[in-house]
Image (tube, rainbow, N blue to C red; front, side, top):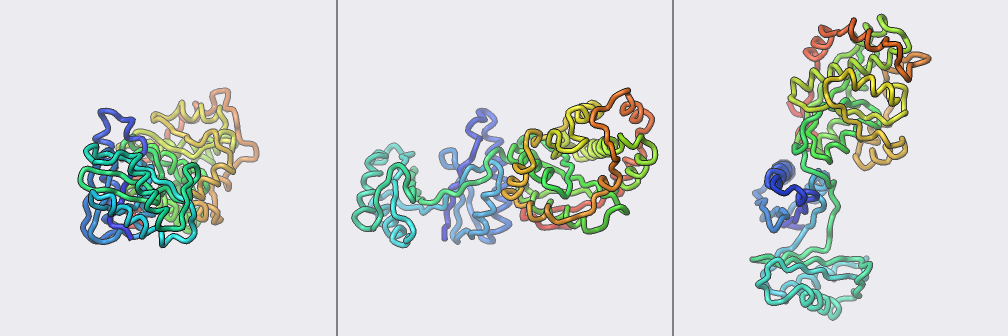
Length: 394
């Protein structure tokens, strides 16, 4: 059980003059997660370009696991804090390593932040390693050790760790703008959401609910997916937007070959209106180039030309196997595989257009702006809110 955690940031050292604001965004997210899982008082502070969280009571394994989800953190090290006495360090390390039965080799890696400390890093390495060799069964392996013992000599204490837990990496959420994410029950859009959360984007989710053509179970599935995805953010909102009337209108009015493409176009129109309401900067979609008819390069070009907002598609170059593997890492895989009704498939044409031509797409848009239907859909949207734990809140 640990009362001190070292939280190593990922890309923030690249940010120069903006580093302070990035650190503040990172600390805001960390504080929210710790408060959600740790009921006692704690202190979060900067120590030599890394963050440390300390409490008088131990941090739980559940909390540590959740911190690993945070975009912007490279790794988490549970540490012991020792006074500035190298004999005390050796005593602690030997005591802890005697409890380790599955490992056989080790390496010591010291860093002397406090340059006034009497021993340099190499001397610390040798001193601690000698103590371990004399008092335990461990052997030294400098190339591929079972355990890496890291020692950081700070100004007022020494931090000792032998475990480094990988975190999500990337940038803190909220530092790269806001997105409206078009979410579905498949594999792709949840993975796209995760990828852009890692790049620091705060997201609002939009699901197009084609009632009465689909049942309640698909909405429940989307809620579960967004509960997982909100854990990578500091809370999130999901707009469940009734889309059945718009789909029905388009299906009756358009050339059947263009039906799927136009469904996507008006989903993007609704999302742009939602982006205006939520002050979001761009749309996010889970498209992979050539995966389905609406995701050909020609169709995406036509859709983007008709969209007033930037459209991000981070999975364009991924194949399905890669996306499914990522979904397991994200935690949405087991939800995405649950079968659900799909209204787009219900309305899908036999021969969908893959290369719009003759100006039909542009002419239909000009003659059918569906403005009233779009505003009606947003005004009737059901809104779900999720906290930092992924739990639904009122």
